[in-house]
Each structure stands twice: as structure tokens, then as C-alpha cells.
Length: 196
Image (cartoon, rainbow, N blue to C red; front, side):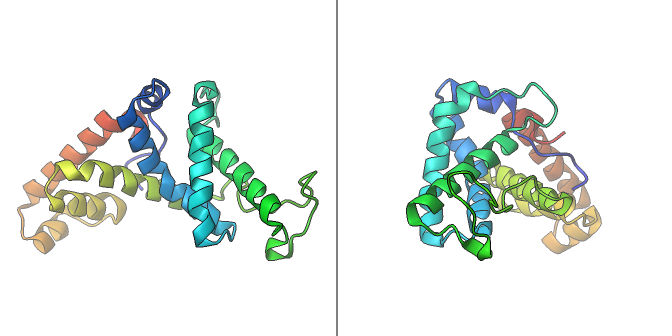
């Protein structure tokens, strides 16, 4: 992803801390697919992943005022990953299904806890950033013609050439450049440091 690194805007977090319903909805829309992905990676059944997601976002709502991004590595995504891991472990305790993937372990001490939500590998980090990037574009795409998002995804994520995208969409190359610029500008406005 050549356009930048994905993180959560301080502005979005501040608005969510101030109980702005639109900010909460954007935060949930942006991160719910990632929480779901983490649940599925931990082999949580589909029918329980949604419930865990609700518990995660309830914990976020209760604890967001304590979240501080004041040191390198203190990202909202890392904080959310930690909350999700905790809620999955709570679910494992309730359902007594701790022996996922044959890991076993002591629930009281978290010994031999599965590594499914430890710090992501470089490849997983790129995949997560791509997921967040796509979610952010989907959130703002309602305000643009449908082809803007398609052009943007093809240019930025797929690294297609503007000429190829324009030809595929039956547009002028300048229109494709314009769409990319407008989407990037809107991403910066909506999510501040989401795209750097």
C-alpha cells in the first residue's frame, strides 16, 4: 500500500470520547470487520464472533477515555487487539473450549495461551491495514459516484495504472486522477491521520 500507514484519527477518537454518535458509528464501522477477523482467527464460531464483537465495543466505550497514544507503538489498533484477546479468553472460559488447536493451558494463569492475537507479523499487519483502508473508503464512498471507490481501490491498493483504470471504466485518465484526489482528500478530512 503505497499511500501510507493506517491508524485511527485522533479527531475521530476525540469525537467518540465526547459521545458523538456519528463518530461511534464510524469507529465501529471501521473496526468491526477487524475484530470479527481476529475472532475467526482464534477459531471462535461465527455465531459467537458477533457477541464477542459487541463485548469488545462495549469495553471500548467504557475505556476509551483512558486510551492514550503517547508513545510509539501505542496505537488504537493494538489497544483494540488487546481488548479483543481478553474478550476471547473470557468466552473460552465461559464455554470451556480452551483447548483450541490443541494448545491446552491454564485459564487462570493464561499459561500456554494461544498466540492468535499476539503482535501481528509484517504480512498480517499489511493485511489488517488493507482491510482498514478498504473499510475507510467504503465508509466515505456513499458520498461519491460508485466508480470513485472502484477507481481508488484499483489505483492505490491494486497499483493499477491510471490509464488502465480509465480504459476499464470507460473514462478519461484525468477523471481517474481526480477521483483518487477527491477520495484521498476526504479520507484525510474524515480520518485525519488515517492516510499519511
